[in-house]
Length: 369
Ligand code: SAM
Ligand code: SF4
Ligand code: SF4
Image (cartoon, rainbow, N blue to C red; front, side, top):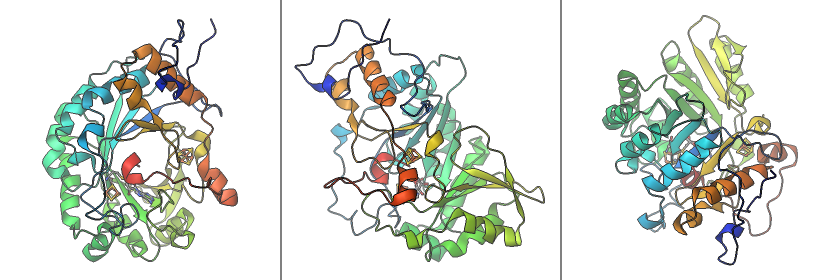
């Protein structure tokens, strides 16, 4: 039987008649470029206690900045319902993000609800969280007990002065390191650490960070500074290409390339030749990986974004709150993914693709990383 597809926006129209026969809201999905849907990133808050200069610069995210009111946020029940439909469509990995996800009250309750979701394969979901680590030491045990598998912690420097310049709220490195230790201690490992490298601001920390985490159970990954959002004043001159990062590390600590763990992995892997572990490079600017991109993002207020650089989201919350049933919402999700043709990083590298007039890219703190 051929499937009847409902465009996600048409579903919102009261005039829209829902066809009697719809696709069952299950089954694996491929987008317009043949990419499967595997990975859903869920932003649980647009607020953060840091003001990282590359993400929520103070000049924009100041005391007058209008965050979303609480009623606009998806509730834990709404998030879980949506996640259940995505899992039925083949999503195997859920990542909670933000803003700072640990600022969302009782987040462990959401973790427990997601952990209880059934999967078509019977294999457990991969349930992870990205955090700035600021309150991780306090939360690690509860998150583990609720069923979280792993955490990724962002840390941009080992030197306090440089780190404070990056987070812009005077937060000390040692507190984040305590959070990482606590995560390991309760079994939320292997912990990955993400370091965004901003040329001229923290690139002198590449080697100290590599030396610090070499030989530890923590996997350090270097991220190229990206042109996400419209607030950070991004400039190509401040991007340190991953190739340079590899060369700088290898000059002191010899490295060799490693095969990816799985297809679609965002980081390329490098192992230390002395056997003391590995580092990763996330080269979103200089070596785009759109060809394998199997990620969909759900914003704090329930909009779906098919690309990190999208200017438009698709309003799933409206469908949830209009009382649409699982069949309707599942079909809308399938429709959205099947029509997806985003490959922003590839086109940006080729020709710095111009944006549509009046379009504004969504902020990283709203959509999650
Ligand atoms: N607050 C949490 C944190 O910092 O880990 C989660 C949300 S944060 C938006 C997710 C990831 O995006 C972090 O690792 C952060 O460093 C990264 N990020 C934010 N802005 C970025 C940018 N302009 N370029 C590259 N990575 C960025
Ligand atoms: Fe907050 Fe994370 Fe953005 Fe830093 S990167 S401002 S910690 S959301
Ligand atoms: Fe995926 Fe868009 Fe990033 Fe390409 S630019 S890897 S399509 S999120």
